[in-house]
Image (cartoon, rainbow, N blue to C red; front, side, top):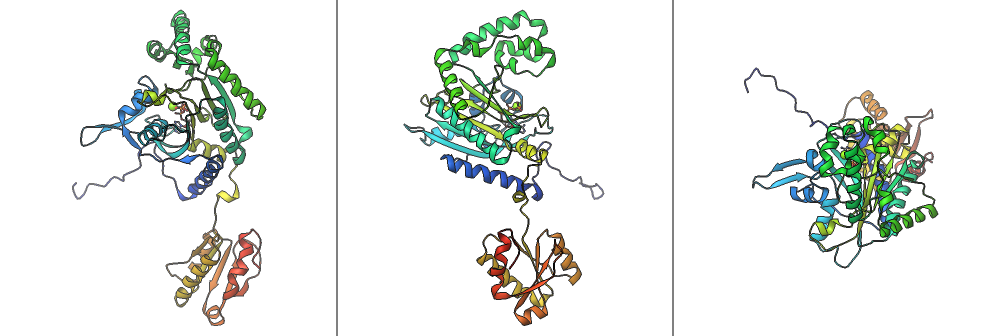
Length: 436
Ligand code: ATP
Ligand code: MG
């Protein structure tokens, strides 16, 4: 680069977001809720690499899907191997569970969380790096486990205050035989309405006609509404499974809508599929989606293993909490105390005091003033810290073995406490009350 060339600032990749401190507390609140919930239901976390062999996704998600056709971040590494940044979590989870023998004559209830990557057009609620939390269960074939994962997600919505803002949509895709037979019926129907199909759908007609049902093209809406429904062509076992699931949800008081056009964008699903949707986010309305994928383990080289799971998009759920103003105070995670040595001679004592308070009050959120400065600038920093209380340590306080409490966000007189009873005095503050 020549000396005069101006250096262009390097920026983040389009569709990949930084999570700034003011947002991360809300994420932590959300993730904390999920972690606690998973423990309560007996689900164990699994963490897998974000990069896998490309073949894993091509073989599991399906060659003729949006994800594999046009959304994957695929590259060759220095060996010439084709690798892909994971676009979703299920395939990796199945790969890892098989590789480590977790599916050997045992059932598993697993969950994961982390970034996923899809080359999509970035917009509100749709990004190129986004984050999912997912649940995968293995070895259980009855509708009870389908119901359990749905109940787990329903409990999360209740805990977040979202229950009345989301709708459960449910469908059954039947067995692969039933799907194959239905496929012929559906193709015949589409052939009769060929002139109404858009380009994308014509292309799908030969490769993946069920996905046409998922089209959002308004010009096709009427024709699609009249299409034969898979739910009317189910095999007996799948129909019984579906009816049993609905009965459990009814008795658990979970409302749902049967949506015969719900097919999901990944090939591995069969029988139960479901989505939790909201109308509060515009067109990116699906916040959680999942279903049964009994054929996937075998498809990836394992023994036939029934499986059911779901994944939720964290960005969309965070957006929903913000849109509906459901961010609780606890998620703001503000400081309790800003500890302020008023001049440099008090720095050492302040550091020791800060450690003593953290020892005595593990819940206390205390920030110590560092970096010196004039008295005025120190007070300004304390004000800006967001803390409720400043603890001042000046010459006089040092001489008396005391600390001054200055309330930063309420009209209240300053107050002094002896250093040795400070922790005791601050404890009520943590419980939400006033310092004693
Ligand atoms: P959509 O129809 O919105 O593209 P999808 O069917 O591709 O969703 P899944 O693969 O089922 O989505 O992923 C589960 C969840 O992950 C979605 O319901 C959504 O909340 C979230 N999600 C999927 N893709 C993105 C993305 N590009 N950006 C943000 N969140 C996403
Ligand atoms: Mg998608």
